[in-house]
Length: 447
Ligand code: NDP
Image 1 (tube, protein in one colour):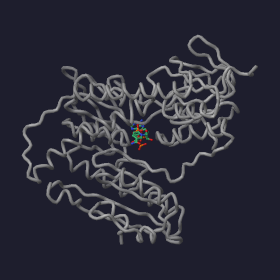
Image 2: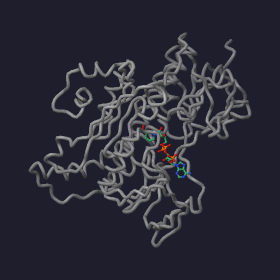
Image 3: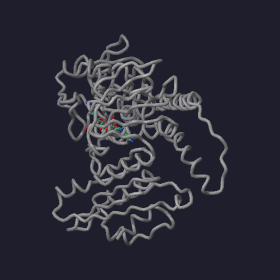
Image 4: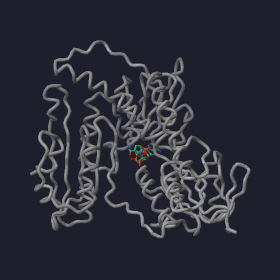
């Protein structure tokens, strides 16, 4: 008789948990997965996918405007928020169903209930107690809101996807991914948007040229950006409105205040500390390069580990845990040269080192940078500039960073990331023939 009821018990059916359970079951493991919300996790239900759908919706505003330069007369346009929310929810519902099917087809038992860890080999879930050889914690993260007076009057991205009424004026606190992405969404859909960010420029952690360029492009589009400023209280205004009070003394009347102030790992009330699992300073599950915690039978992948909070990372690491535990292929995570994109308007995409980081590692850093008006805007008349940049280790000629702000940046950088990951040199970039006329060709023709 088997020593345990299961080989793997996964807590959290998001991107990482679903991938790990499906691949583990494929190796012949007996797997169950617990989820107390919709199956699909942050990315599918309240993150990447609905966000990208809203970003597409917002982009039509540009398309209608740009069309005039090409001879089109676009009649009066109206936008209906409830229609967009309903269409988006229908698609998310469909994806939720697909995720359930994936689990069922793989032979993974889905338990739609909250699970807690009882001991390193036992979980309690839905009134059952199950023993398991391994536990994988893939519980994700949740939006963090700074504790300020009136905090509960604000919203986060979770609520922004379902606002009953479209906010004509919104204040977004933060200067990271979520802040600039939602600024683009609400601005494109017709809101008057104010970003309030405690530093300058936006997107700390990105290359300085990227940060400055994006901040400027957003300002040119009409997004109001208050830098070196923080919302330190929210009050109720007239007729359901809000007033954001800033530490600079300014007050901003609006219909919603949205916190985009980071995300905290979901590690509370899971029984982790009780069984001796080490948590980090932000409450994240501390794991090694095999995604294993300090308790031998307990692993963690995805946002809960506080590593790069990106869906493809959770998916890859989930598959690696499965390969390590059940596929006889011990697999180390690889978080080097991870490309990432911010779906702002215009979007940002990047892979590798910023110029600043490269200068701390390589004695000789060469930088190639290009700022230009995209061909499309010669006729559309839009005053928008694309910025592209390569960071090169002068000693070897290797391209160690590629950065772009401009239309299609995420689609372009994905391909460039393969070359960067494989260690391509600037000479090899230059030897590649460009595709003309594109913006992407700039990456192989930069002086
Ligand atoms: P980020 O960490 O990207 O940004 C958080 C922002 O909030 C920062 O600008 C930060 O300022 C600010 N902030 C933090 N604490 C406070 C505070 N107490 N008061 C005022 N401002 C504060 O978090 P997001 O929520 O935007 O996104 C979370 C993560 O999710 C991202 O890091 C990313 O990994 C992932 N994500 C990825 C996306 C994608 O791939 N396209 C899209 C959305 C999210 P400071 O810079 O000073 O720290």
